[in-house]
Amino acid sequence: MVAKTIIELKDVWKIYKMGKVEVPALQGVNLKIKRREFLAIMGPSGSGKSTLMYMVGALDTPTKGSILLDNKDIAKMSESKLAQIRGRKIGFVFQRFNLIPSLTALENVILPMAFQKVSEEKRNKKAKEYLELVGLKERMSHKPTELSGGERQRVSIARALSNDPEVILADEPTGNLDSKTGDHIMKLLVDLHVKKKKTIIVVTHDADIANYADRKIVLKDGKVLKDGRHHKIYAAE
Image (cartoon, rainbow, N blue to C red; front, side, top):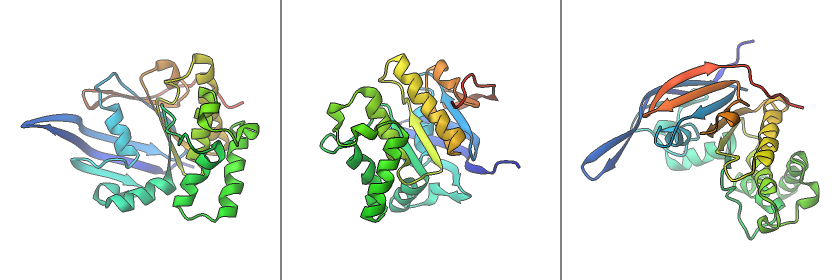
């Protein structure tokens, strides 16, 4: 069975204005992302990969072009509608974790479900399940400052899963971690891809991290330079 496209970019441009100067961050990008795909977006600083991440994640809208999420053009939606879609469809994992320091691990994972009006009983139950899934059963009551970098990133992955999104979008998810801990985080994402059937999109400048993916997109000067599949060297355990 051929996987259906979940996200499609059609001739997407993003142009920033700096005074009277126009700076194109993306130039006519066309891209299809299939359900249950593991994709790495690569490129040097200034290549447009962060801008592309904002487009794919419905965090920003293009200057021109279309972005289809489940065949609905998010480029034409209001910010309130985009926020609803992000909450339901996309889970975010960031390089700097973005956890709320005053909340425990459990409370950080619960928070996105509260915004989606999930019942208190259900969100507590699901938050505990996801923290157990990422190996933090004994650390739920700890605040971010009481956790290691790897543990904090696992909390952020549990939080990304909280509303059971179809897509996990990870922006440099190992950037603040040592290589061994980074490997553990990437293998966890592989597990989510294989066992939970999640679409995983990783934005990275690191070729070793990109090797976990099934497909690599390489950007340069806001354009897709390469788009290819390869046999990844890691598998779910």
